[in-house]
Amino acid sequence: MKTKFSELALFGGPPAFAQPVHVGRPNVGDRKKLLARFEEILDRNVLTNDGPCVRDFEARVAELAGVKHCVACCNATIALEIASRALGLTGEVIVPSFTFVATAHALQWQEITPVFCDVDPLTHNLDPAAVERMITPRTTGIIGVHLWGRPCDVTALQAIARRHNLKLLFDAAHAFACSSGGRMVGSFGDAEVFSFHATKFLNTFEGGAVVTNDDDLAHKLRLMRNFGFAGYDNVIYIGTNGKMCETSAAMGLTGLDALDQFIDVNRTNHHAYRDALSGLPGVRLLEYNERERCNYQYVPVEIDAQAAGLHRDMLIAVLHREGILARRYFYPGCHLMQPYRSLFPHARLLLAHTESLCDRILVLPTGTAVAPDDIRMICGIIRLALRHAGDVSKKLAPGSAAPEPA
Ligand code: T4K
Image 1: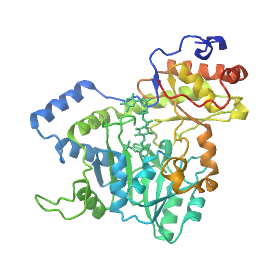
Image 2: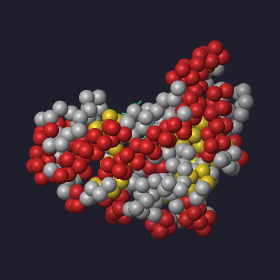
Image 3: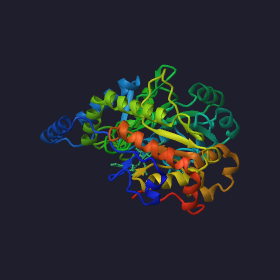
Image 4: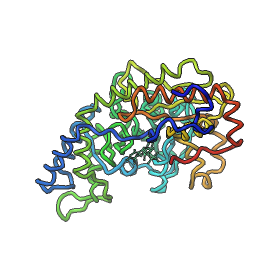
């Protein structure tokens, strides 16, 4: 454990981690089970197109999420595109800007206008009052994002959608195996979309899924995922290729077998961060609601530069030099990324909380590749850097941007 600021890598000490620690290191369950599933896939010679592993995976995801239908896809971005098209979204759709850019891209890709709405500074999720103010005659829907796995105010958003006759889709990329009011994420709104990307706590290498209780919608989603085919030579709908392949589903099934263990590790890690960062001025760890089901897959921390004495970007620069690859998710906000920055140059006027969060948030490493001892080391470095904020600031040129991970 480093105790003097001169030991920090920034001042010439050896990095705390010779092998970098990452935010999104994949969780893999029992490797033997996974390889056995791969053997079965090769023996069957059914590699994709609605194979048995995919069907099995869909059934288990639907059961866990408490929904009738799960339509597994090749990733969550395509799943969002298919879901928004199947729901008939057109014109304008209200989305947060404080999200991964895929939420907005899935709309813009289909020439639907994402209208960026501000978030609640405490929950980091869409502010329902702001949503209502953004509705125009062109609005056809709302996409809420359960950021960090903490569910949106689903009740308020459902009431707004009902009142204005809008479709309601949730980007639940972060929220698989989480609940809101005791009900599992998956059955809120018209449909919800999970991501099973390699960096998510349950992964299928690449993958995603749309889940819904709506039979007609599920039928449409299945058609759209497979070019619109309703049997040999019979295309009855516009579609794309959004299918999940068998090896991905096998990875997902193996992860599902180990899901409780992944969550236990994430919870232990989150508690280790909470204990090690407690009482540190200017540092606010985002808490999960322990009365709900949570996956604890992200460790977002808000750094208040004034109270901490150091800007978030300087702290990231210190951490990266130590081999701790903390991330600035979702900097700088979708509205400041292209094409949105050019299309909507004034969007930022209504996004004060989003911009403030983008300036403060730091996401720390967790998952099965990170142990409580690593966390104590990471937090020790954060404490040391903040205690010697003046020396750190002097060492780092003013305005220095966070370096890209090595
Ligand atoms: N909606 C929301 C709210 C989302 O957060 C996302 C995805 C989506 C929609 C779209 O879902 P998908 O279409 O991806 O299913 C990552 C992921 O690529 C992205 O899936 C995720 N959100 C986002 C939050 O994070 P990057 O650019 O940070 O990925 P990358 O490659 O820098 O990886 C993060 C860290 O993980 C690195 O330090 C390295 C480590 N890593 C990564 C991969 C891929 C590994 O150790 N092994 C790996 O295989 O976007």
